[in-house]
Amino acid sequence: MPDVAAEGLRVLFCGINPGLLSAATGHHFARSGNRFWPTLHASGFTPRRLHPEEEQELLSYGLGITNVVARATARADELTREEFAEGGRQLAEKVSELRPNWLAVLGITAYRAAFDEPVAAVGPQQRLVGGVPVWLLPNPSGLNAHYTPSALAEEFGKLRMAASAEE
Image 1 (cartoon, rainbow, N blue to C red):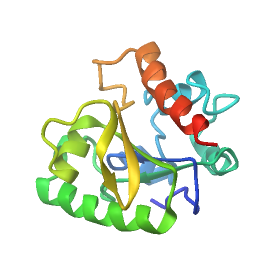
Image 2: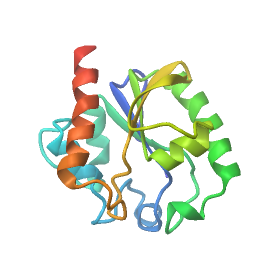
Image 3: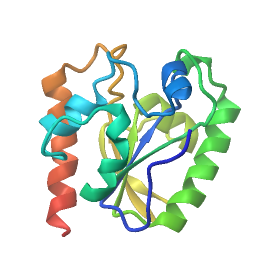
């Protein structure tokens, strides 16, 4: 899956890995049950709800998308610890080159595995990845029942406020 990215973004969102539908369509967060696109709008990152095929429009808002692991799977739990560790190394290199203001990792378990941070929690992290501050966000997948749509929007909104304060 190609990244939606450019140098100097406000926020580079980082999913765990592409789902099978995303890989088939070539668009990030393509499954209708994924709450990424509605959450971006509800949290104020975008002025309207975008659809996966409009992902390039994110760049005009200073936003981008990448993934920790490139391999597409039906479920993130199909990925190995080694894939996460290698993905974390590759992500650090990418972020070092792109230099966004924030790296937003979408998924606590993925972040913990990729960066060997077993007690990481949602919110800003102490660690820099590629020299860039990290904000850990809940996975917006419809499979993540721990967060309601409003709770997701609230967490994304905290990052939006921090990113806006730096402009």
